[in-house]
Length: 387
Ligand SMILES: *Cc1c(COP(=O)(O)O)cnc(C)c1O
Image 1: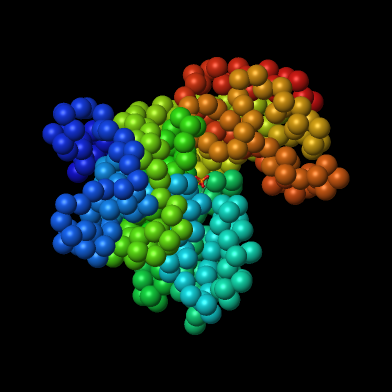
Image 2: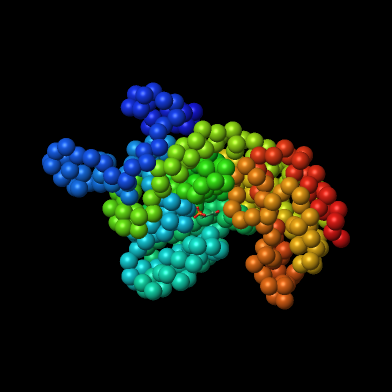
């Protein structure tokens, strides 16, 4: 289906709500029945009829249809945030005694789940760089049931050969989940590459305005139904109608925003690369990127996030640079209208800072919807303040 049709029409039965262009927010907890038999039917399968908004809700269903189509998936569940989507996708598919293979340094709360929560249930995790199929094969044990991928990673943009890993996993009955937040389905379609579950944080590009959280999990209908009947209903972490409505609104402008951000990112990266106070840049579509060829092969685009290292080896100078920015703000998250910066050293005590560990000098930037030159001017004046 054409992407314009997905974003503007799919799932929107406007004749059901006075032909309004924008869908209503079905702000209701429950739904009424006239016939006992109909109520009984709704009890049988909460995923098909409207019974109670912890399950399905008409506003959320519009969003589900659009997001499933964007990913080329049969079905989709939308959660209250990305962390919940990942948690449910993993938890529904593991049992005591299982082993997971995961890319190194997955998103913070995934790492927390693997290191703190899963050991309590006798589930172990092996971390690998994941850059070759062999690294997955070598880490796989007799009790491996799950592969966790994040491609690209949201700090160093490390990527995995998705099609090869997915095909191998299938041959071993191993379930795969890929965090696709960096690319969105516009630039990478994990389901079409053989991955079982494609996850993305709607908090980032889908919402696009830094005003709401959401998490997307796409896959086969059977997989989504399995998760819906257990973790989704039990944890009760589905997105709420108003937030779903904001996500639908975000989707209207998704392609336009991504196009603009792609262009701006390229311009800012080009500027940073030639600056004498910048030591290196990490960006998957830059020729210096170690996995540039694989990035070009499996991603349609790269945008928004990149990381740079300043030549200075002093923590105070990194701090001074970040605090000198006047328009680019310092905050976690990304994908909104506003450009952001976050230095890795914020999470490292000054006494522990070691400039020889290059990751400790990482500064991650997200280029938002401002003019490229406006951002470059801000970076330029901040760079002029440091040695
Ligand atoms: C932000 C983020 C998440 C978590 O999403 P939330 O909506 O904040 O829970 C997961 N993965 C990646 C790569 C992210 O950037």
